[in-house]
Length: 163
Image (tube, rainbow, N blue to C red; front, side, top):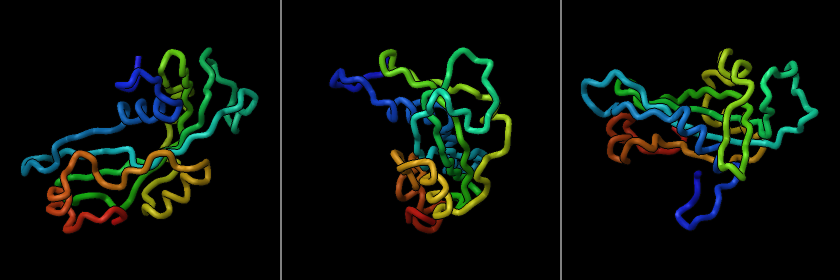
């Protein structure tokens, strides 16, 4: 069960973020001179409750588990050759959040994972606007969390948030 050190249960947004980070965040040690890997981090997230009678343009799900939240997220990448990519990708996902059991799981995965990103190769400012179309951001992480300020400067020539 996911709880804070204080023993309090995580909120729905915290459970969603925990799932997204476990699913998408990837640290591939891009500062190693021999690295061909790519760091991936969850940069922006917004979520809204999903009404059970709202199909949102999707057909009926065969899954027994129905979504409780629609989530919009943007991922950011950094690699050893190019540094932090100024262009980002974003997608919509559906999750079932159970606060009593302290879990958030993907549902309707075939609808979300099977297609190209809904927001593909856009700049950061446009990505912020796209995510905010769904709702208020509850997670913002512009900088690669796997790198120190010095490592980001060495890769990018700067350590600014929005470049």
